[in-house]
Length: 467
Image 1 (cartoon, rainbow, N blue to C red):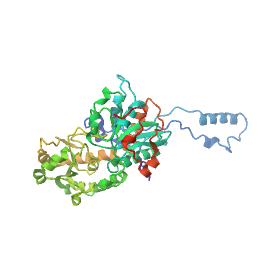
Image 2: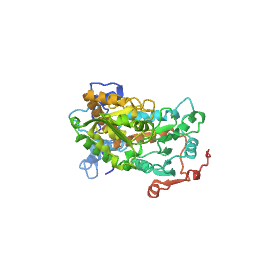
Image 3: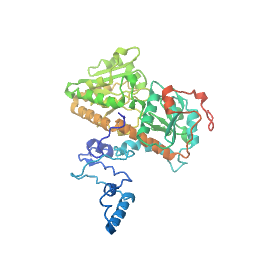
Image 4: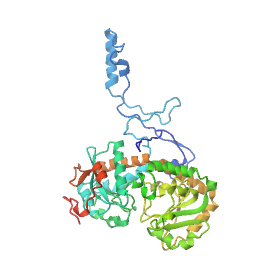
């Protein structure tokens, strides 16, 4: 099955969760989602009446001639689109949109708003807006990180100067974009793409305004002041085999089933976490594990998967617990979306790093925000958080339910495909040049089969020399 093939109904009622996301506060009234208009260029089925061999065309005289003219008009003269009412009548039959370019999730405006925000530094009328070839070349010839340069030219996808990335990150990202091309007709584009999540990008954070040729680069996570960084849905939306997670399309079902098998009343009343010892937040937990790990309401362990493989806990096993602590790695952690699916109350410590959907997380509604985990505070506030959740069991359950509803709706493979489409089309709309195939480019099929990486010092840099 095509991983993008499943589509929800194009019209439905949106309840409290979406009202909150749009207005910033809960609303008791439901709102209607605007239905998708019929695709432009669809005409009536007059040919079924006036086709070859029809009895009407065999009529003689003036009446036949008039009918023939009328049929020609019906067949070949475009008529204005008749927009459907936002509130369909009961007797009207719901129909799926027939134009494959009109996605049934096109009401995801709030999710997609992050694309416009990320691209706003390159769409600023106060400066020379747009994206130049010099900017793209500057990224390619100065960004020595795992990833690649993506070119789409005349419907063909090319990978340029691929640098090896951690685990399967680069491969999965390429597969996500390739399958997107099977779903949509994408415009010509030329983009720098990074698959690392470390703080190397920090060194470039302030250079955009000083050096206009410092170009945009796609990243999995960033801080708000990283003006030249554009977030994209990360590699785990294809799969995460290193965490023993099946492809995301299937993993959603696995997590949903796991959550359904664990009724709230039967779950363990523990603030639970298992994570690899990486990053400040996790090191803070590791350093204070003696105090935190022995607390009666906590089961938090930061471990080395390689040294202690027996301590590994499958993502779906997290659903046995009422409260789940999300901890970032170097910068972020891909596990957040998995935890949300559990219907457990997800405790999310503050962090300046964000993913493409974080602007839709609502404190006290679909996550519980708490103070950051730092070496200064030694995570000493976590036992109090666990006690609060125990004393407010109904609130914790509601947060878990809202978190799962959010994940099912906004983090599906279909929503991710739509986000990628919006990102690539919006980026292409800002390009001030027509891309041509780069000397280092290889077709995507060849890149996937042979894993053709290119050492950074061997990249062809005709416009912007390496610095």
